[in-house]
Image (tube, rainbow, N blue to C red):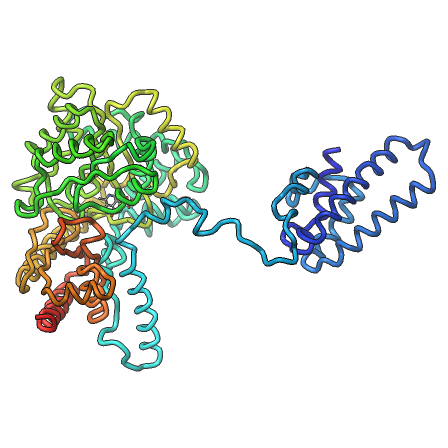
Length: 599
Ligand SMILES: Cc1ncc(COP(=O)(O)O)c(C=O)c1O
């Protein structure tokens, strides 16, 4: 009977409206009749009669002629006729057939003469998808993309439609989009891993350095094939590399079984928030301003955002008393704070925490029994290493020892930032500390549902945590490339902050880390009024005008959160050294005109 179901099911073209709508009831009836007729005939050869034969033949011919009228299915129908002869299931086109299901579908019950009603609409989709906001790819970027089309037209037609020739995307920390060069060793190893013919060719050593070849061979020995799924947690050898990196960075043991490789840090953050949020009564403490991955994901999962303000006057300092205020405020509203998010170095603020401040934060989480989520994706982007070197939360927790025993900490890192800047490769990891084995098993299950982190991204993670070492052929080039990018980022951070601080009504804290400046702009009252009259937040209004006058795309402070009555924007300092001076000049010219216009 199953074989017959298959045969009959393959007669219908699932992509054809005719088959799916008008033909459906007909098909199901025929299927029903044919099935029993054929069965009857097969099982009772002795009673096979001429009249039965005629009925069956009539039904088959009738149905086949209906099927052949289906144009889009002509080729397949012919094939199916031959399939009938073999009575073999066609697994590719098989639709699990259940007469009852077909008869009961909404579509079958609809009057086909009425227009098709969509079953998925804005009104009935998951509401939190609609309410979640993600400013760094929001309205400004959509406008920028539209302007980019105009610029293409301008280029093609040789006409001057706009006062600039390109969009400078300073809205997102995407280094290679702004021409940061990839680290050569990383790409060499990747190329060899992705192309086994290259790795095994007789001439490979003429093109690639010996250590890149050796590394690719070593990686491929443990990975096998970049086109195959790996384990859900990641490739075992890469997990070991990450643990070794953490150990040497912090001076404390790290266990590979506590590490999960992910498609960038975003996935890891989302996975933890998925686990922590049950409903609106679960709150996650996030900095204001914050990176909107957090606000958007908390909203998406139906939790509550519990903002704690960073202090702009003290260089975006994080004060324990403010954590306490935010916590108590949530509790008074019946919300249970479940976790505290710390972004260090900060995005969008660029502040870097010192160890004493970090100890206060850890003690706070321990006292309140909440999970500490430490976003450390900018750990390589610290420009004040002499006074405030990067210290990981894992190290602080381990150094505090018994005092904070039992604390639950999850730390995130990524290949997207620092001098690596491989955003498009989607590599990252999280390390669990103090998380129970039962919860770890659930995290593993979540990872398994997504099958595995992408394998190319895992290779980049391995390269990030295990770069060439002194004595290897690629070491000098690696160090030169790394330091050139880092030194240049530091110079660009200083240049941009100085230029912004030179503008009327603008103040900008010196970025100590990360890739962004987050200046406060004091807008004239008339500009604020006009923005409101246009239905825009004042800082969004300023940013739109900046984009349309200069082609520079930045993100309004309202997308990250800011104290009421203050206005900011976030810009990266990623444009190349040659370009950044031009960016500063264009911002300065625009700002002067804007202020003059609304005085
Ligand atoms: C603070 C912070 N966390 C996480 C991420 C996400 O990084 P990834 O590309 O690894 O998903 C970003 C990206 O800009 C970020 O700024």
